[in-house]
Image (cartoon, rainbow, N blue to C red; front, side, top):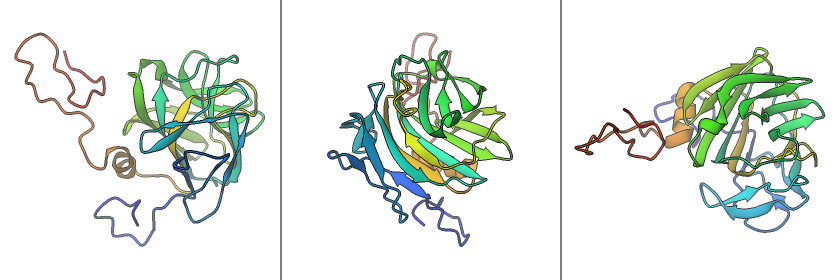
Length: 232
């Protein structure tokens, strides 16, 4: 029950169906650290790097991706720590995870909009290019034919599509120049996370924003954790 929010008295384990922590920091396989064994094999040359927690993995070339076969089901959640800005790609799109041609659970379009792709792109309305440089927590919730997106524990938009097929590719669309960039702690759940679970996964109960108001001058109240959510 280590994935459950403190005080959750349900009988559920809350654990993900698949989890890639990318802490191997070597080799050409990313191990699934859940109990289900959905290992992810390297294609191209993804690069081990410093992650948000321990090591991470960078998809910096147009031919870099991982292959696996992790099911999602009709209701799912996918979360990841991602370093921004994302990679600049030849195709413009950046794919986090997908099933195959034309079915992307989570991706970013050439203009920076976060969304899904099922034959055509469906935007959530959130522009990732507005995020400050550094690590940010992205969560997608697929249910009822739509996908709700959270960034850093806050709901930011909804795509009017949902992919229900398994995740077979991570970090790119095969070798189609849609490489994502740098990521860490990728998880797939076969249920929809609650907003409390997302907040707990993001910052373990710490405030999303904290202002100590110690500037004593100027028109800006700076957010203490450097999230970029300053007040004016």
